[in-house]
Image (cartoon, rainbow, N blue to C red):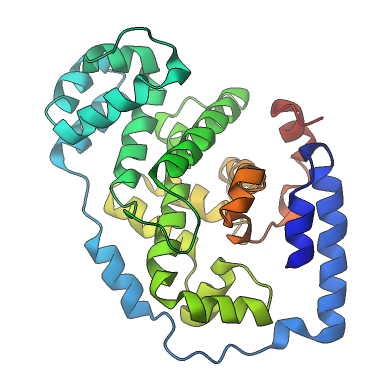
Length: 309
């Protein structure tokens, strides 16, 4: 695991080739020392019941959010803004977002209709989903070195990059354009499930350098992408979104060519983003294992789009 972290701190221009070499070297060493056969002996670290309990605590999307998303999906910006303004917490979130220095407004923007107009339909819908994910965010992070500001920055980076990708792929489906919003949910779920067992988790990872997603899968036979699918279903997102999220794990490719392609782009985007120095420092680079073979056929296109030299 030490070697992987050292690799990820290199500049992005050599990120894929060197990571590929390191990945195969690690697998070679793992076979020699039989690393993958080390048994996890911690009893009841995480149970299926605990996961189900956590999912039950996630609030369903409110009627206001449901109607807002429906209207945005239909392209009705003005009507969506009228409904969204009835949710005071959502309104405050939107005002805080659009008045950040990124947008460069000299005077404060307060009108929700104007905010939706600034963001546009796809970005507005994505922002509402980000808001829903943000409701799950802990007040204090323990497993990952994050706070509300850095987590919001992560959401913004993923959203902006995914918007660039969907435009590049000529994807006009608004729900697909918003699908990336669910990936930060798996980070929150990971924090919630492991934060009261941090010492045990760190012990396991010190003996066996595996990602958190693999630990969860071995212990209770579900992974973080399964949990994201449950969240998507609870929020009544289309089945296609859940399939894309599952494909983005890199371990569950879809038979549908377009869904699988979107899963590849999402998987690579997640890993590329979490390989940046600030997210390495937050220990998010240990989140999932990079499936190199899965994304190899799109990497050149991805690197060109993201301007990786």
